[in-house]
Length: 65
Image (tube, rainbow, N blue to C red; front, side):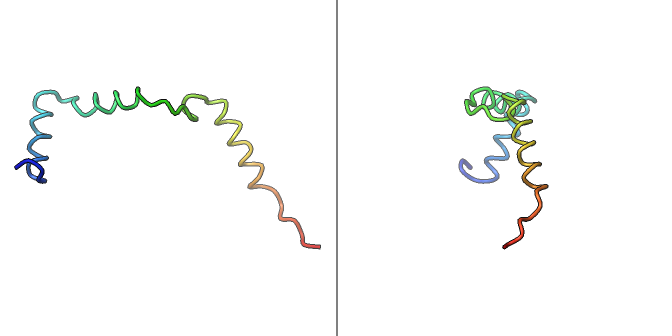
């Protein structure tokens, strides 16, 4: 049954039977290995970027002359 949907579901049930937090642990490892940084790593950068976007979106349209 390997490689089929039924086989995958059976494997998932087996993993969860051994450890109810199996998939949460895998996800945690993936998140810890991330090296991209981004807004989650730097809230101040997120604040600055949000302020810039807010200012730009509230500008009036320039009249064509």
